[in-house]
Length: 445
Image 1 (cartoon, rainbow, N blue to C red):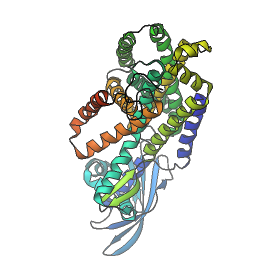
Image 2 (image 1 turned 120 degrees about the vertical axis):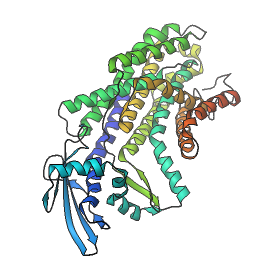
Image 3 (image 1 turned 60 degrees about the vertical axis):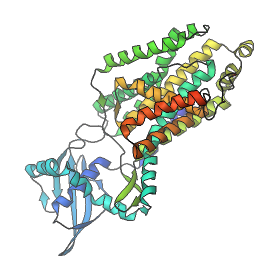
Image 4 (image 1 turned 30 degrees about the vertical axis):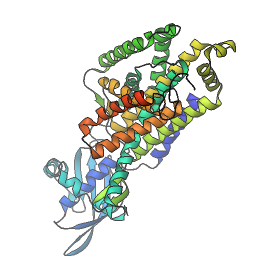
């Protein structure tokens, strides 16, 4: 089942890549250079960017309208790299129908114009998209933008919350440390992408595909080893030894990641970040990127496969039987320790997948971010219904929506306090969560 999931996610990435042609960031920079090469007050009608005649070049045809009339013009921008290369956004050459610009002109164009807010505001591509977009009221357009911005984080929180729910639903214990496994997956993906670039890959597809597989595999293998060596021997105990051990495991894993990565983070440039206009309200444009949609679709696909895994497979039947009555399950031949080890590997694999999605969306992860990420995912699991995998998935969507709404309307520095206060509120009033039982005892799965 896991192999099928990986193949399906790889197919999603491949489908997105089929339409690639011009790097979105390079096309944006080239478009923003157009107003600087024309008279003040000119208006523009820009055609779709296309690959230029040379290596790492973007070619744009456009019409410039001034008081003297309309002229058809063209601009070709050459960059220092492409894909995940560090110099993909560095402009090294500009050619118009009048000939190439000098090196000094290119330097001053990038240094004193393209790197300023005025260049972004004057982008003729965004102005054209705003004119064509569906017009909404300012409130509705702003709310839609916040909802679209919350989609990638909802996918990440949901997968991590499902990791907590898988373990709690099976043995009734909260195990910490899944945030660190997400960071582990993100670092594995970052390293794999870096090796792909060093190997000469000119497109992001090989790095993303290999990063996805390596991240999930690394998370599952580390989880399998940690579960068998540190957690399984304590399952027969009735105290909180498992919670203490998983806290120690999280600390050890964070230090392991710090030593492996170093104290400075590793980041990859954004890819598939073309700005797609969804709607608008006057000068305000509601946008989304293909990568954001791909991250959300990957999270939704993984969530759906997880639900099917628990509902339709032999492993899922064993998981539900053991969660409902461990003694009866053992009498029917289910090995509780082996089942827990596999479940722990599945949970850490999902956490690592969430880490990969963080790298794909935001460019990287830091070794110290696991604690905060894991705690928010735990809040999502509690809100949705701790022990209910479907509830945990819904809880991730709820927490991401709460964060987006709070960031849009209230002081952003208080956002995390609000999220953790929500955890306290649910633990006091409804510890079973929205989609679980009102009380955790007796525990119904």
